[in-house]
Amino acid sequence: MISEQQREKMIAKQLVNRGIKDEKVLESFRQVPRQEFVQDEDNDYAYADGPLPIGHGQTISQPYIVALMTEALEIKKTDRVMEIGTGSGYQTAILANLAGQVYSVEKVSALAKAADKKLKNLGYENVQVKVGDGTKGWKKNAPYDAIMVTAASPQVPPSLLEQLSPQGRMVIPVGDRYFQKLMLLVKTLDGEMKTINLGDCRFVPLLGEEGWDS
Ligand code: SAH
Image (cartoon, rainbow, N blue to C red; front, side, top):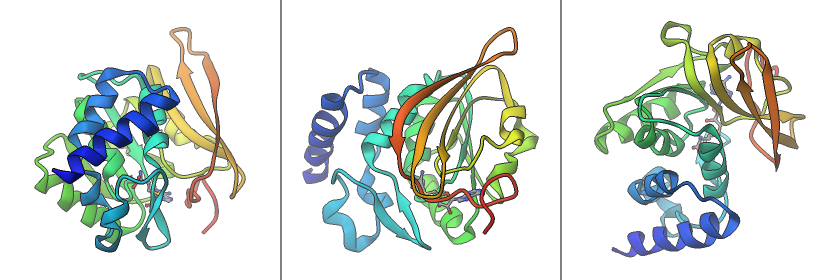
């Protein structure tokens, strides 16, 4: 009960007030209990306006950033979505409410396992989580209508571009290890790529063959 009120307050203050408009995205936030995805000791801060540690030096992203990235992808119920950086699995759940299928790749095996278990317990049946280097994508299920990268990369990994369908959309933080620009890439029908800058952000590094060296 308390968490439901906190969630509504978070949606109004942190998301709607900052310009998140897509009703389907807001509804997805209503459905996901963020307190299940933070560490037990952070339960009281589950709806706070910022990232939180999830162990292994990683973080669950700030709710507003999750919303901004999700809204930018304009996900439809028939879409196949790939997420790179499962982390807590919170963003995965937000995507799974909107998409047909979500394929999520996480480098840290313990995080992938914990997220997979949580998502299953919450009843998500349209999610698959894999341990691996997400800079290479997940070729088996390609192409994807939308790709979301939730760790910072020095470049757009070529493998991810290859696995994006014609007219596909990708959001990815690109920059140095400490500051990045959140980029929205849209493939157009004639095979061109349109790039839109969604603003400044700060993510943990994407470590892998087509990202940063570990
Ligand atoms: N969306 C997550 C964000 C987690 S932080 C959430 O809100 O909980 C980013 C995650 O990316 C971390 O869990 C980190 O381990 C993972 N990561 C970093 N490099 C990766 C790579 N090459 N492939 C897959 N995951 C990676």
